[in-house]
Length: 276
Image (cartoon, rainbow, N blue to C red; front, side, top):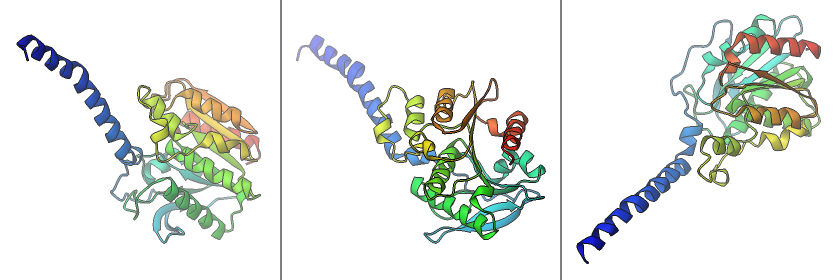
């Protein structure tokens, strides 16, 4: 091969083949390593937050999950809180501080593979974990109509699915509160990687948009306009799809909206407007 043609072949390989190989490699890493990205589970066990008691949630596949519980005062409703994908019981306590101080019962659910819990997280497993949390409240004598289901970020997918299952079974919760939610996990992935065809390759779906309309209970969606993780519009679409949906937008709170006093205060007012 003449030197000039050899040089052109090398340039073609560098300019075309190498970028393609990089994209294919990135896509393969996202496909095969996606659960490590979706569930960056903190492995270390944290102390049970002050004011809470340590409890165990038993799943139907035989796992014992560590969780935290404080009972309601003065016949207040109880809240099941499902935290985000990188959070802990300590963070969940911060996200529910105003509710616990106001006398609501609060169950801080944790997931398999998180905080020293056994198992590996995926959508099917977190569904079992949510059902275990629900059974714990039932053993405390707390009915569905006395329970508010609440989730933040990844936890909104878990929360919406649980609330929808309750509704389909004829016993909806008192309310559903979603903080920084996605319409579905593939939608969230597509927003994060708009230049890759990721929707069809996401293993876990958490399709909240498909199920939220089944919920026969009021729904509050809180989302920050400057959320850099999950687009603000996904939260609005969920609220619009709910039978009785309220959407509250915050200008500058970011993705970790659940920790802010303004979000918790607004949620308290909203719950009280429904007599909860």
